[in-house]
Image 1: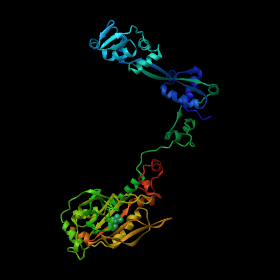
Image 2: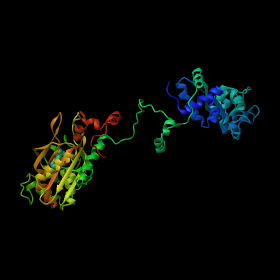
Image 3: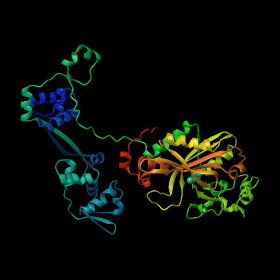
Image 4: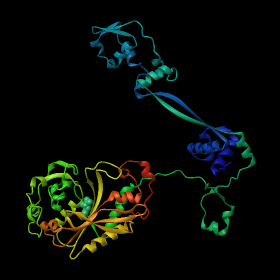
Length: 478
Ligand SMILES: N[C@@H](Cc1ccccc1)C(=O)O
C-alpha cells in the first residue's frame, strides 16, 4: 500500500477511536477544516482503510414571498374568503391580490367566471400547496407546487460520513509513525545530520504530473515576433499601413503597367470604393506614358487616373515601402513591414487568399546589390537558414531583380521571396535619388519550412490541439 501522509495518519488515529463520524467532528479533533478532512478521507478511502459516504439531502424553505402568505393563506385563498357567493370582476379587482388570485381560483376549480361575474362553485378544499405552506416538509407534491410559484426554494445539503475499515483498524494497531512530516530541509539540518532523524515527506517520482496547458502565443505569431525582433536588432524601423490601398500605391507607383496581368480581376480583390490620388501623381502618369524626366521610355499609351484610384485589398506590402519613401526621401532609410496581403488564389495546401508578407527597404548613399545580398543572407541566417543563394528574377519595380532561395534539408533549394533595387521609375517621382534595396518574402512559407508543415492552412485554423502540441521553436525568441 502507498505510504500515508502525515494528515492521513492523523485521520486514521482519530477514526480508530471514534470509528465513524462526520467531517465536522473529525475536523474539531484534528484542528483543521471539514473540507480538508473530506480530502484526507478520500485518499484513505482509495487505499481501502476508510470509507467515505456522501449523502445529498434536499430540503425546502419558503422564500420571502412565501413567508408573507403563511398567516393569511395563499392569494387565491385570501381573495376567495373576501366575498360571499359571487362578486363582479370589477369589485374583485379592488382586492390587492386579485391579479394573482383570479387565475389560481379558476385553475383550482373554486370559481367560474361568466359575463364579468365571479361565482363560487361551492367547493374549495385545502390543497397540498396550502399544507406545504404551513409545513414545508409535509407534502412533497405541495412543496414542489410552491417551488414552481417561487414561494419556496430547494436547497441541497451534502453530508459525509467517514468510517474506518477492518484494514484501517489493522493498520493503526500495527502502529503509525506520527512524527510530523517535513517537505523541505534547512542548511542546518543537512550540516548537522539532523535530517536523518526527520520524517521526510515522500514524493512519488514515477507519477506523471497532470498536463498543464498554459496560455501561449500562437506558433505562427511567435515566428512573426521572431522575425520582427531580428529586423529590429538589425536596426530597421517598423512601418504599418492600411489593408485597403488604392491601385495607385499597390500598382502604379511601382511601375506596374495598367494592363499588367496581375491587375486583372482574377488575381486581385478589387473593392467598390476609390481613393484620391496623392500630390505629384502626375509624375507617375508621366513616367508611365513616356518616362517623365527619367531615362526611361515608360510603357507608352494613356495612363488612366480613374483606374489608379480604384481601391484594392493590398496584394503585397511593397506599396507601403514606396509610400514610406515618399514621406522619408532623405537617406538613410531602413524600414520593414509585416502585414497581411490578399490575392485571389484558389485555396490548396500551399495557397491561401490571405497570407503574411515581410517587406524591407534600405536606402542610402552608395548601397549596392552586394549590400542587398548581404542583408538577405544576414536576415535568413538569423532566421536559421544557413545557405542562401540568388536566382535572377523579374519584378516591374526592381532592376536588377532576384529571387532568394534557401536550402532546406529534405526539400533542397526553396524560393523564399523577391528582391531587387527599385527602378528610377519608382523612386524618381518622390525625389528619392539614392539607391533603394527592396525585398519581400512570404512569412507563411517560412513558417511552413520552419514548422515542417505540409499544409499552409494549418496556420490559420483554430486547431487548438495543434497549437498545444507545437513546441516552442528552437532558437525561437520572444
Ligand atoms: N512584392 C514582391 C516581393 C518583392 C518586394 C520588393 C522587391 C522585389 C520583390 C512579391 O510580392 O512577391
